[in-house]
Amino acid sequence: MRLKLLAAAATAAAATLTFATSAQANHSWGGYHWARTANPFTVKLGDNLGSGWKSYLSTASSDWSTSSVLDTTVVAGQSNNSCRATSGRVEVCNRTYGSNGWLGLASISVTGGTHITSGTVKVNDTYFNTATYNTASWKSLVMCQEVGHTFGLDHQDEDQTNPNLGTCMDYTNNPDGPPGNLHPNAHDYDELQSIYAHLDSTSTVDQSAAVQTVGNGRASWGKRVAHSAHGDTYVRDFGKGNAVITFVTWAG
Ligand SMILES: [Zn+2]
Ligand SMILES: [Zn+2]
Image (tube, rainbow, N blue to C red):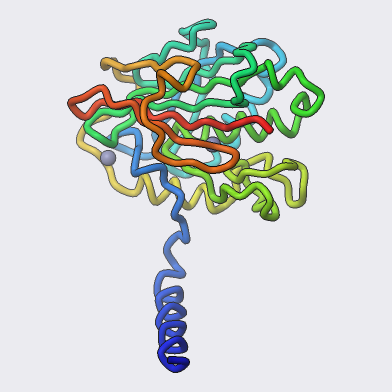
């Protein structure tokens, strides 16, 4: 039995070595990705934000643009306060959405089961106006993470009691805990390279297509498909391969 375990360990070690040159990345969000015919491609981030949030979107935009496969550019928002999805781009909004439990929401419209046609990011000032969350660190983390979801990235770690991994895609009770969870890390860029390694014959970036929008409450998000203490994932199926997937970051 012991020998068998050692053999298994040796095989695992060999496998690790074999794949050491490729990205050790595994936090794709269900294989969802923007269809595009070339890399790098540019995702427009629509700024529907109040003045207190603009610098966080600007930082998230430049952080994610460090990726070799995608760039982002902040443009004027098209959905004002409603945060209605706009085809081919991401709309980013803040509002006092109420004591509904969530700090941030990222939703993507998907067609053909995998191709992202739009994204929305909402940050809830009902919580960000409180002493706990009204900090540059919490705002940086949540903005960076929700925008990251709109490219098809999942979290690297969902146990907020684990030590910080140094990425905004990691749940934490303390964004400032070393090495700090305020920005993407190398693993996120590796994962983006992996998600966007193939090219598509069509593009969903900056294209007009029918997109669906879900609301601010869980009744409109569809079925819960994943759960952890700090976040849940919901899928609302609109049929014919069209769905809206929502990532929820819970407060507290
Ligand atoms: Zn594709
Ligand atoms: Zn998240």
